[in-house]
Amino acid sequence: MFLAVLGLLTISAQFQTASAQDETETVAVASEDVDNPFAAAASSEPLHQQLKAKFIEGGAGFMATVLLCLIFGLAIAIERIITLSLAQTNNKKLLADVEEALKNGGVAKALEVTTDTKGPVASIFTQALLRMKDGQSVEDAEKAVVSYGSVQMGQLESGLSWITLFIAIAPMLGFMGTVIGMIQAFDAIEVAGDISPALVAGGMKVALITTVGGLIVAIILQIFYNYLASKVDTIVVSMEDASISLVDLLVKYSK
Image (spheres, rainbow, N blue to C red):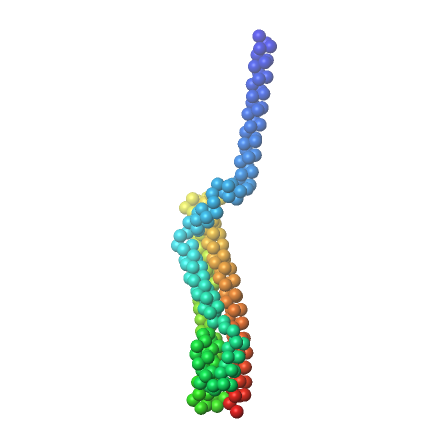
């Protein structure tokens, strides 16, 4: 009898030890999941669903305005890229055609070449040749080149100011969401009368998500702005170089 009781106690002790080990392993696995929440989230939901969830958590109002800044900014940037690409012309070929026309047919023939060519450089050439056709001097044609070149430069830079506006507004909206999130966190603490991580986490999450959203939008639009600014500078430099060459041609063939 004593041996039977002793055997039952031994089996019970072994069972309790095994149960404790299982619980320890379960807690360890749970602890690993908590320590690596991004891996768990990545394995459970696709990326677009995670982005959608964060967008909603950040607050539909402010996140929508930040998203609108990105949409409008990208729309203007794409339009500017297309416009500036069409504005680029083969200036060497245009100058060669104008010189050939001035040599063989005079100013009237050169005007036909420039009016049939698209782009800001051809438009500047047309204004200068119109002055020469009206009997004005080369100096008047040069003044027309300078003044109309400024007009063309302004048209090339149009729209860039709107991109800079969205670059400035997007982080501001994000920071405003940060302030509102902090206010919500303190309101929750005031209502509860106690400070706990659960109360503060909601407001802090809104604050961080809106800030990150605004900064991401500003970074994307800043890249497009710098690309467009460099493209405009390249076109302006080539436009000035071609204008100087045109004035030299007018001096050469006006004698």
